[in-house]
Image (cartoon, rainbow, N blue to C red):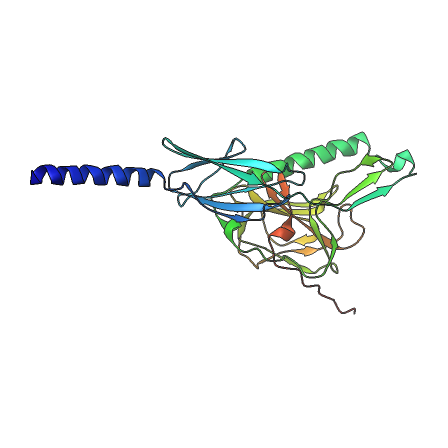
Length: 282
């Protein structure tokens, strides 16, 4: 009788423990800005597979992963986690943003799309180079750092803004601009690996791309000089370039952009509030 009671108690304990184990969540945390242009870092239980809107995500041994929302991302998304037979579906709600839209009418048609075929071929070639550089994503987890501003100066351009010329919407601005004198230092906003160094692209002039891991990268354009080489590892705060007015720029400034693979994100959502810096004139 005693043996039967012990066996019954043991079986009852198993019945209680197994359901509790099965209910342990696969999604441990999500941290970031759930808005258009935002970047989100998550952690899942060990050995969990994660997909975002049907796209499989890279997951570290510790369960960390990252994803982002482009400028015009829809208001809803889905995060799916699977571990064996256990599956969780997490709905995500993304905040829509209002962007500055500037409309200019009455322009001569030749001023809207004046680019020659030879120049278009160059632009296409350079765009392919940028795409290859951004596709070279490493296993480093520098994207988890608290990003810092890469330059001091004055904010002169913002993510998402757009011009409409003679009713034709032009490409939105996908970075944040920091205006400062030519030669002003540009530092690494986070650790990374240099993936592209180009001194003279048609639109962006001096161009530098740094890989922060798992598809997250920084692009710095209109640079006067680049102080690093492709393949070089950089640490947060290292001097990597100087501000210039190369490419299609109306004045010296840094255009800093953040990508998660092909999704263009808002750098301002990753850094503390900007402190404007004034420079003394010689």
